[in-house]
Image 1 (tube, each protein chain N blue to C red):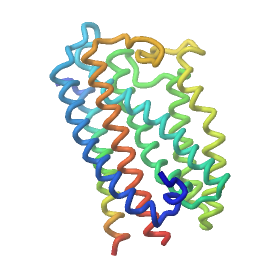
Image 2 (cartoon, rainbow over the protein chains, first blue to last red; image 1 turned 135 degrees about the vertical axis):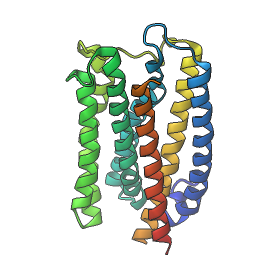
Image 3 (cartoon, rainbow over the protein chains, first blue to last red; image 1 turned 45 degrees about the vertical axis):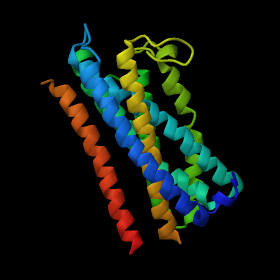
Length: 230
Length: 32
């Protein structure tokens, strides 16, 4: 793979189109499969009833909100270090989708919290740090929009993105570091998931669907930017 | 019908479809 050949926007443009199309189709198929498993295969929860089915979007959205920030910061850092045009575009293209998934994680979590915890919102460490993530995304988007010179806008955004990275481990480990109302992780790389296999399958399918969706949407946005900036 | 579940899914998919719609509009405009 000729990585540097694809670092040029003009050579990346047709490849991005192909990946975006494949990602879009994969996202739709995976979402249909995930929703089918989530609503028709996974059983009703013995304690929470039907409302637990929010996890099929809440958990994947929360994962994506953190993961997309890391990817965005990676591209921003690469742009800062190597001064490649495509890197800055990738970072800018990921921010709106990351902000959207952060909002979805907060919204769905809140609608699950009311019937389960008895409240839409508490200022515990997990919820507050996730809200801060939304503000970081919005800050990144607004900062870039406020500066006319593209290179300066990208550099300013990159510094903000890199400073904000410190928030990601805080979100992830908040449920261990502090006594939060939000429960600990049900799924981890180091141990078996603490939920029924069908529930886990539905969640993973939806996570993959959101992943493919993010790739497709970000690449279509990059293609728009390449056309706009010439 | 669980209304909490309904609003969670309705707003999520509305957001995703809106993002796609705005992006396709931008895409069409930049192709001109």
